[in-house]
Structure formats: C-alpha cells, structure tokens
Amino acid sequence: MVAVAIFSFILLDLSPIDPVSTYLKGAAVSEAQRTILEGYFGTNVPLPTKIFNWLMDLVQGNLGTSLIYRAPVLDVIIDKFTASIVLMALSWLLSGLIGFALGVVAGKNKGSLIDKAVKVYCYAIQSAPSFWVGMLILMVFAVYLKWFPIGFGVPIGVSSTDATFAEWASRLVLPTLTLSLVGLAPIAMYTRNELIQVLSSDYVLFAKSRGEKGWDLVKNHGIRNILLPAITLQFLSFSELFGGAVLVEQVFSYPGIGQTAVAAGLQSDVPLFLGIVLFSAVFVFVGNLLADISYYLIDPRIKESEFGD
Image 1 (cartoon, helix red, strand yellow):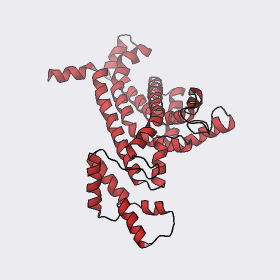
Image 2: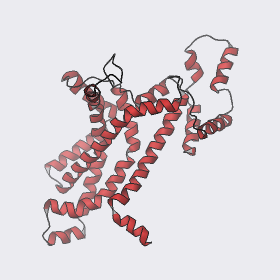
Image 3: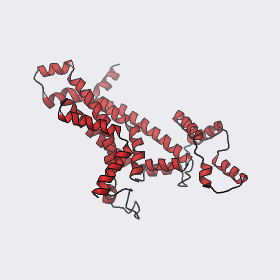
Image 4: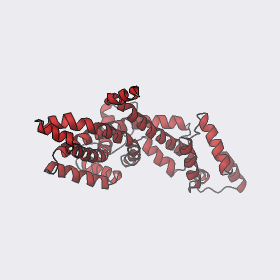
C-alpha cells in the first residue's frame, strides 16, 4: 500500500492535472493570488515534501477534502461505493457462475457445436471494449426495445431515498448485464481448457475403464480438480471488475465509484482521485485474500496438509 501510494502520487504529480487551473477555470488573477492558491492546494512545494505530507496524512486516516464535492474524500468514497457494491457484486457472482457453467459444458463437449459457440462468444467479447458492449446493450434494450430506462441510478427528479425498489432495480439491470457478459469470458475459457486437460488425464481414463461416463465422470473427477484454480481466477478478476465498472458506469450514468473516478480525473480533483486509486488497490488485495481463504473452505486437504507439516 505504501508503494501504491507513493507511485500513484508521483504519477499524478507528473501528469498535466493542475487543481489550481481547474479551480480558476480561466479566470484572470494576479500572481500573488495564484501563489496563495498554490499554497492552499500544496502545489508550490517540492515533490519529496508533497509525498511526505501525503503519507503523514494517510497514516492518520486523512485522505483530504474533495474539490468537487467539498466533503472529506473518505465520506465521498464510502457513499459512492455503496451504490457500486451491489452492481459489482451481482456482476461478479453472475459472471463466475455462468462462466464456470459454460466452461464445463464446452469442455465436456469438446469439438461440438456448443463448444464452438462458447469459444466464438468468448473470443468476440474479450476483443470488445466493455464500454462498447455497454453502448450496444443500451441501444438495443433501452432505446429500441424500451424495456429498461436509459440510465441513472434513480429517475430524474427523484432522490435516492424516495425511489422505489423497482425504480432502482430496473436501472441496475443493464449495467449488471454488461459487466457480467464481459466478465464471464475469461472464466469460461479457462474452465473449458482445464476440464479438457483433466478429462484426458490417466486417472480419468482409468475411471472410464471402470464404467464411469457422462456428467457423473465430470462431477466426480473433473469439477473437483478445476474448481480451485477457477475460483482463484475469479477472485483475481476484482481488478478487471473495478476497471470495467469505471467504464460501464460512465456509459449508463450510474452514480457509483467508477463515474466518480472519471469525474475526479477530468476535473483535477487530486485528493479524490488518489483516494479512489488507494481504495481500488485495497479492493484487489481483498480479492486475493478471499481467494486464499476460500481454499480452506473448499478443499479440506489444504488444511490437513498444513496441520500435518
């Protein structure tokens, strides 16, 4: 986290982002007034001093004040992430379950029409940017078919506290569908390839000689051996999930952490942008930690081997 904080700060400091110029918005001010603003925003001090002050504030839990929202960065992140957590959780769960199921079906029926269809879909969707997929889904289901609202988290003119569950859920469908369709491709292809390797192994051939076949063979000898690596890949996709949410929320104007990150970058809100970067790093680290913990819950042999050592 220290390394992420330092390098993120350095990269942002070297970028064209200038909070003073953004704050002035082209207004003519004297050199003395600009110097006062540079002192307020801390842009007129050497880089090592900036980094030291940033780290000291970070240790105390102070991420600064957002220039856009005029509120503590931590409060803004918590508020926006609350809107995004349901979107990302549903997308992550659906992409994992559907992707794993498609991978198993394709691997079991290697060379069949369904296997070729799954491969074509995965190759196509992995080559397409998530924002393009989102725009396509938006045009089809919201503009042409008019089945769902075009965007936003709640209807225009309605506060989030006054919106009904149906109004909120209907605006969550298309962003969730987009992230799920994009996220299931890697897990489906990985599961398919792993299952094909397992089904060609010696112990599976021995099981076939004993009369095992069909889904019983896949269930008893295939899924058990591909489940752990598939779960690892799914938890490691936290970083891709967060990055996809940034683009998808922008397409659907969904008021979450992704759209807030874009706004912070475009409007030179350095404290908020840095806070979101650190938060995304924690998000990925937590995903890796959950993957490790899940091993103990899924495969008791790992726990037994450690106790045996």
